[in-house]
Length: 262
Image 1 (cartoon, rainbow, N blue to C red):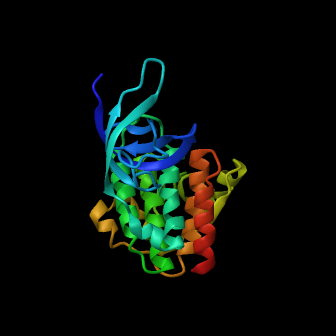
Image 2: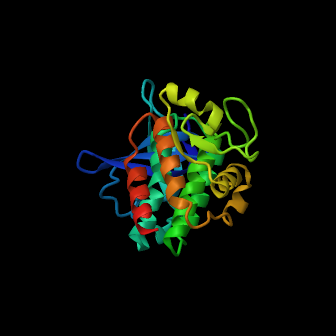
Image 3: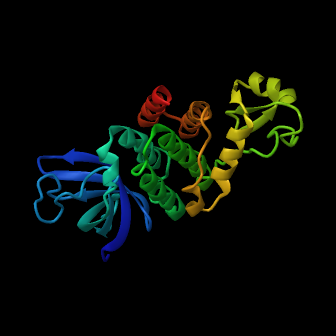
């Protein structure tokens, strides 16, 4: 088969032997794939300076051989370096969950162009972030919107058990069951072993609703008010751990860092 052109975000790098690299990427055309870069560790011509986490590449990939899912990276050029992430360690730590979730929570070779666009939009925002609240807002928006793109969007308009609309005088909770739960249904959720996570503060719910529904370009202007970041990050991180069914170390680290400096 002829090589395929693909544009992809580097998610993970693993050494293979003395000179080769295995490159995990999330591509627009093929979804998440792993490619072998022959000589990738030592190349001073074909791949020099290309293999860093968060780099966005334009590539030629040779298809896997029969019985294998390993592609072969033939050529590559840099489309976006997201250099600003490496100019402040807080930016880099806040950005790490962007590629960790694409690596840990997506199916192999399942294209999701909107998911990739969201990741690139988020990285562009984080590399320009001037303060911790902007970092926290950017990460929260990514976490909420990626749930939608993967089919796990939160139910925020009404109680997900009884359907009672929110904002009718009864306090709601944000539940790990997947969204708002009214007090009348809270006991049922807890009996199922899925305790509610936090109070559904109006500003937090409205911000999450906007993060789930706005166009990508408009998300750049969306921010969460001071006082909502810690609570929102804690809920979203815990919900993502449940969705992924595994630990997410970079998300835990980013949540801890931002919660301590906000």
